[in-house]
Amino acid sequence: MRIVVSPHAAEAIEEQGGRLYVWPERSRCCGGTTTLAASTSPPAKRDFRLEASVGFELYVPTRLTRLPDELHVDARGRSRRIQAYWNGCAWVV
Image (cartoon, rainbow, N blue to C red; front, side):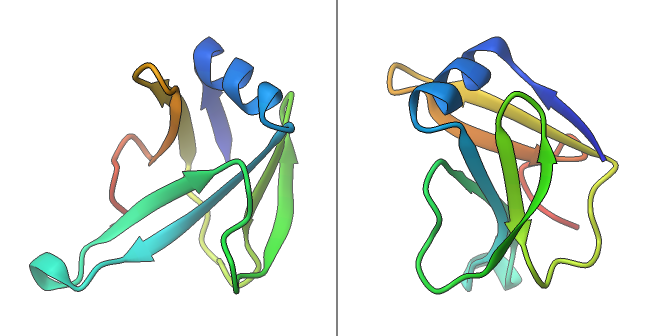
């Protein structure tokens, strides 16, 4: 998996502890769309494994069997909210 991180995202992740958790999240809306969620703290009731270390530690769900070709990480807005894109998309296909 190739990891592409914007400078703003790398800085925000480092300031918040140096760890990023990324996981697919299903919604009940729109026929069960699966999006990609990201946070610098682990969500409750999920198990993660360390997948890579690229200036920060990247964690993915333990049960995730298929990884993307590319994972893009960016920080948006004044709050620099971390967003992740799986093969360039905000949703997982």
